[in-house]
Length: 114
Length: 115
Image (cartoon, rainbow over all chains, first blue to last red; front, top):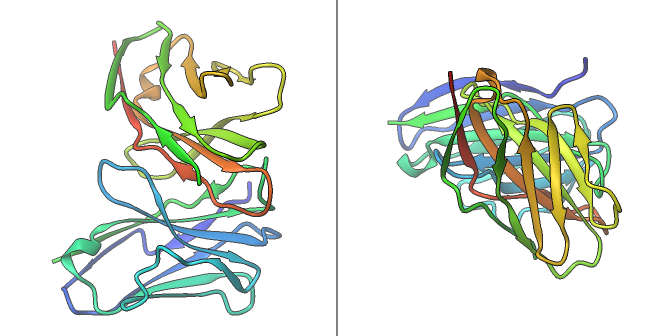
């Protein structure tokens, strides 16, 4: 069964260091999302791609976060420099299209900044 | 903009009993979809059930059913015959049908099934 792949599963980094997460969506899914989930809360959108274009990055802290999906397939989310408050689960999701179709999620990357 | 409210931080249910998880929403979009996801302790979000705002009948998927009351703007999840494996976080989410908008999630409800 097709699934969204994410790596790494877990990451511990020191504050002020750079960190990167990778996501490979389900084949054929044009829409890719990065969500951040703080412990005990629901996921919040960081950035949405349609193919290689950014559709919504209004909640992405652009001074330290960047995201790219160069060929419209896999995507990388980067944080530089990491801060203690960035400790969270980073979830990648993809969908065939919007509207009635559900988004499929990867297993997430659990980031701890020390 | 859409908003999802889940007012139950935690719920307990006896094994084999039914449980209802509450979800209310707010939107100005005339056409929208409502989704429920399960998140076990391992972290992945598992899609459970979908309801469209113009669907005449409540959605059902196995032991999951969605009690959709459009006038009240509620979309409660009903789990029948609870199992120990149902213990997890449950999130209600929605998005507009028009355009390509992302899912907006509530804060979730932690369900614990007791043997």
